[in-house]
Image (cartoon, helix red, strand yellow):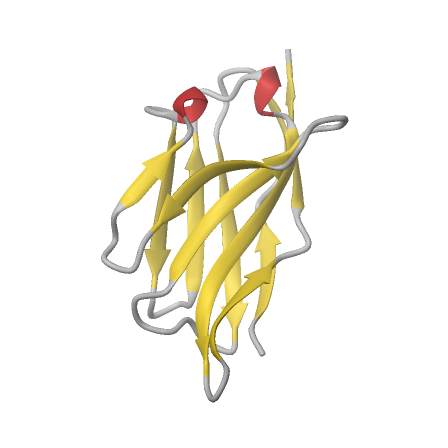
Length: 120
């Protein structure tokens, strides 16, 4: 089974930057899909950024031009580089991966989340 461990969250001032990391123990399968979600207090979980099997990326409009998702297959790690942070980016950020599991096919996995707080 794949386990995802996020890190890199913290407290930052408006306009600052953070890089979130999501390490997949058990290894990422080729052409996996991955994404970062976030959930602010009292709000539904929101898809922030995704990366497909061929490396194609997509972002929610509110983070376009500020966030970048990437993947390092050698390190089994997915990143979310965040810059120009705003107070409305404050949330718990979750890593999601769709990975191939032998004899079971494609399965979805979630990390436990990392808190990002942006002060005004």
